[in-house]
Image (cartoon, rainbow, N blue to C red; front, side, top):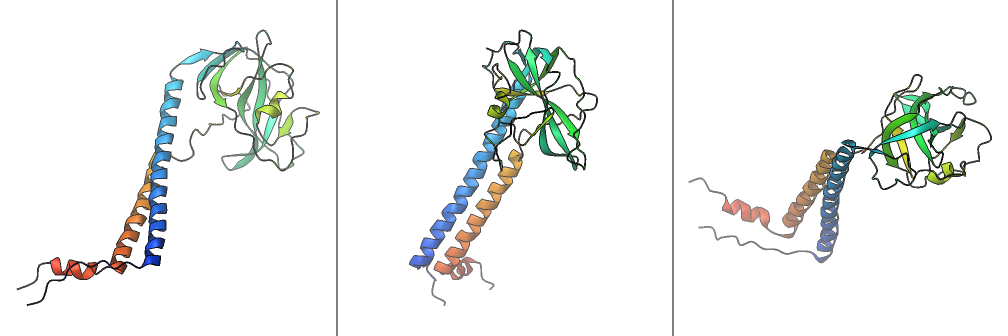
Length: 247
């Protein structure tokens, strides 16, 4: 009669140290991905809530809004000033994102609107024609300005219009106006003739993808744990003993 095999655990110190470090890192990454999934889900919910109501922000004092809020403004577009954000790919084609300032009715503030995308030319010296827009009321989505972007060189003050820019930073726009610039970009709803509507990306990775990444990290942690136990114990022999034997 074979003697019973007792489970024995005989870890190696350095191997155990390495295991703890790697296992902890994998579990941390999995938890971090779950947190990212929750953050993205909250962003989606917040965007949906803001989309349900529209606020009139024609008064410059009305800044108590959240990014993603639908807004309405009465006033008029600048007939001359336009900015072209460089290197904007759309449907695999090179072009520019068109920014035009919109003044409120009493010209106490200016709002930077994102009107859409314009196709670029292979000759970078040839800039696209800017379609005129005589609207006296615009609606869209108020979106926070991005953090100051990295650029190889400081933006040069434009001497002619339209001006080609490399970043869409608040400070870069504000320097062109002697009145307050509203602290949100206004992504316009209405499509214009000659301007492609450019859909804003709310999130670049869906919550479900973060959850899938989390599952991968947790799976790797589980595999690492199993390998560590096999190497540091008689787990295989112990399991074999527990299996029913043929008579």
